[in-house]
Amino acid sequence: MSKDLDEQEALEIQRAIFLSLQTNLQENTEQKEEKNNEENNEKNNEKNNEENNETKLIKKPFRPLLDSSGKSFFINNLLNKKIYSNNNIWMDNIIPDQFESVLITTFKYESKILDSNFSKCKNIYIIKHWINGVEYQGYWEMKEKKNPNVYFFHPSLEQNQWFHANLILLIYERKLRVIVTSANLTEDDWYNIRQVIWFQDFLPKKDKNVFDVEDTDFETQLSKFLYKCEATRLIHEFISPFDFSTANAQIIISVPGIWREPHLMDYGHMRLKKIILSITKKNQNQNQNQNQNENENQNQNENENQNQNQNQNQNQNQNQNESGKLNRKSKSYITTSDEKKEYHKSKRKIKTRSKKKKMEEEYVSPDNSPIREEIQEKKEESLPHEQFIYYQSTILDSFSYLNWILEFISSSSGNKFLFQNKNSTSNLQSVPFENIKSLNELQELDIFRILYPKLDSVLKMGMQSIGWEYLYFNGKWKNRDFPKKIFCDCSIQKRGNDPAFLNSQIIISTFDDMRYIYLGSHNLTFNSWGKLHRNEKEIFFKINNYEVGVLLNNFSSEKNWNNCLIGLPFTFPPNDYNFQKDEPWINENYRLFFSKEN
Image 1 (cartoon, rainbow, N blue to C red):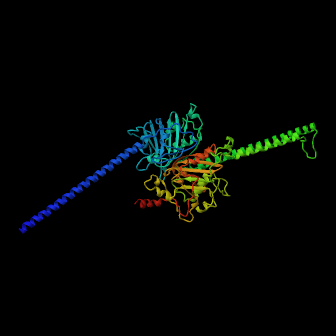
Image 2 (tube, rainbow, N blue to C red):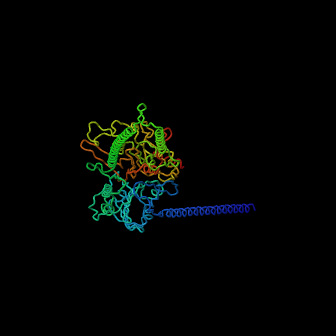
Image 3 (cartoon, helix red, strand yellow):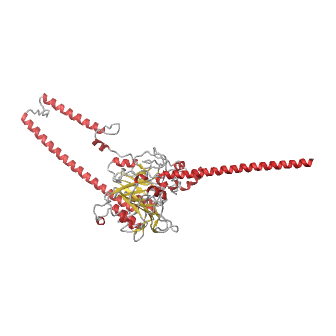
């Protein structure tokens, strides 16, 4: 009996074990099913998100009433970001719904942007960067379902050369729209990262023989750029038929190569220098003419006053002779009581009039509008600022090269702060800032400022924000000789706006005789702007990148200048770094992102 009981107990234990295993298997299968369902739900959600993102890329409406004069610039709107500014637009707003042809130059591109904004275009030409070994130099045609007429151009590139220019030329309604921007043809650049945009419309040339009309400087620079990009066939379609004499900006291009005379000042920062020299010369001539006119007006007024005084004296003498009532002791021409009363009344009137004029000139109403429009024009004052050259750039990998920084400051100031070598006879052969031998001494000039985001503001944004990877700076901030006074905070969060990373490249000169704003694709690097080289025989200029930008300097009034400064994508004037606790974002700090995220 005991054996039978033992066998039964063993069977029951086996059954219990089997049941427990079965339940565990069922639980495991249920868990696996739940996980699979969760994974499927996540995949479905991702698909839905992708579909939603695709719906977000539906083209925003074209705005034909936007100011297309080219006298100002715009900043792009961002998805899910609040912006309070008058010069913010969607990139889509400047792309017409239907147009004939478009030429786009970009570092990289995504087909989503082509599908959403350029699908109705007949011909699409794209000049872009390419990788040797993966792609090939030259021109070819690409067939797609939505864009059957897409043509690619790959310009010649050698080692350490980059195609970084962002330019759009599109033909619509018999007009040419020229767009210069810092944005690549990608979804992130158009909708998630702050960019700068300039555009202007140009009408066709009136002369039927368009090739016989003299080229303007703007037209010449665009033609040069397309020629160097090996897209000569596009010059006759996009450049030659149109009149660029109304251009309100000056274009600056960089093209890879070694440039000598007579092309030494055609590209890069030497082209920038040439433009600024012409601006300063023009301003000097205007000031001289104004001074001459003022002197002539003063002389005329003095002569008129003298003539008036002489006439008054003659009239007084005549009145004296007629009345014969001159009181020689008091030397007064007024003797009777009635004449004295009238004399005192006239004096009071003159005093009250002069007081009213002073009150009108000094009084300003609560809404900052003076009593008269004439006074308003006289009272227009610029925003408070110090006189500097400000440069906002996302890449600063050439900042540690002292000679090049001095070279660039010399060009961006038009030789305003050039220390010439006494033994040299030419500006080009002179040694700029020859008495400055370290970066620390550079800040003593107190003329140049770099706008770059602080480490704290970048860390607050986090890796989930798009655009932090654009920042590149390997400077040795903690070294004693590092010029910390030159750095200002490029505020990621402007007052009233949601924070967003910038990919804009902007130069602002606030000198009274040299006001200008540059915007485009040039970073603060010698690869972008070029570098001068000297040897015993000659001077030559070397550039590594393709770049495009525009320079604005036609500010008709203080109001126009102030509006441009207010429309910048960062706080201006910028705040200096607090050197005791602040430091810039440096590439090595990316590890702090990972430690923070984990």
